[in-house]
Length: 257
Image 1: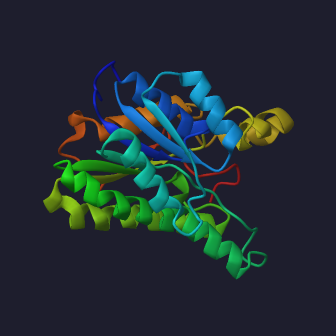
Image 2: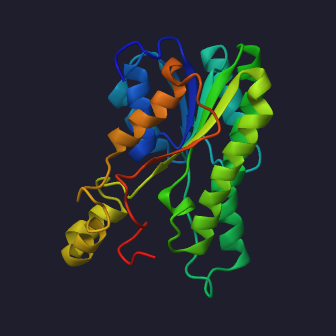
């Protein structure tokens, strides 16, 4: 995104202290937005705030799966920025192993972290976006939402996010609120899953790359650019879509389907 394309946008991002979330925050700030972000790690939020500097960022310590965690973050963001124009549900994750090992608590946590938190973010932000004359929400889903991979609870949660986006886009359209999903493929993030695989098991990593026609995984920057495009005026006619950013990757992991 070019400088100032998001000038004045008041944006709230969950899970913005590291990885893709931090990249979204940095690019949004560079584009002229004011940003409020939350995460569970205090030190990571402090590092982000120190790295980006300035007065256009607000950080908030919150667990989006805790009762009132999302709602408290939205209120803190509104108080800090004087209103709210857009939100990004970037926090996510999975607990538990395969279908025989994952227990009900693993399923409940995974579904709430992904679907529940996104629904609460959009629902609690909607009144403020309506008051602002409209707005935009982006949910970060995954290639696992429609190109199934393991574990099942993660794929099910990501598929549910995509359905949530389609439904809420129709529900909130009359208020001028757009809702979309971005589904990244396997991202190469320093220190994270696929970067560790690259270093620890080059043969298995090569199998993963073979599933990507271009032979290169997407980067957080590329995914963040897609998120910010959907938030920008250039995407004013787009709502209810799931935008894959995966370089036509065939499956979520080295084992394929």
